[in-house]
Length: 200
Image (cartoon, rainbow, N blue to C red; front, side):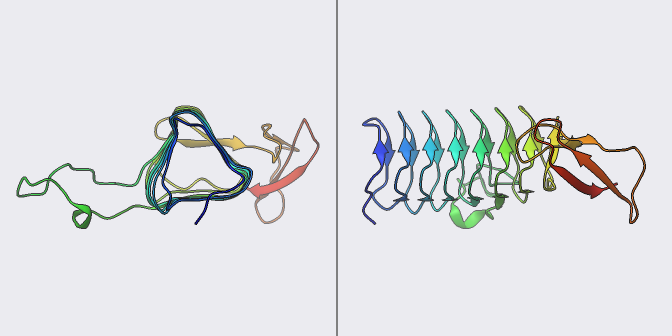
């Protein structure tokens, strides 16, 4: 598919078999492989690696040095911090039991889904088989080994849920310490005033 209305730095390597949406900017030394689909109005930072057949939505920002491997789907409005790594092999080995170099048929691709509006912090690692929910936030350097719920804030290695974040990015505060009917708790955003209800 022809790539038009896209800003590509001369040092970037973009496969002619990749699909790049209008208004997207691809910066120095980025590599985008064959079959990758990148939406409109995205920013792909310096040194980013996007593997073959990766799917990326519209208005996504991928910061310098991030690696996005085959099997990853990123929905619209996602932020990927610098040097984050979205992996695809849960049982990594270079060789087979017989000592031969592994080929594509010798391992199973693990999938990752980053849902609408989520943010992945600098240096975070997302393991295969994980879904990061809408507007969730993964802290810098976290190692995510299991799903993150929508609006969840996770930090650490392995990443653990420590709170919730607003659509605007600020950490939510409880409206009260008492559980609501149906074991729900209400939270509000100190910045924009939005309110949310989450399981207790």
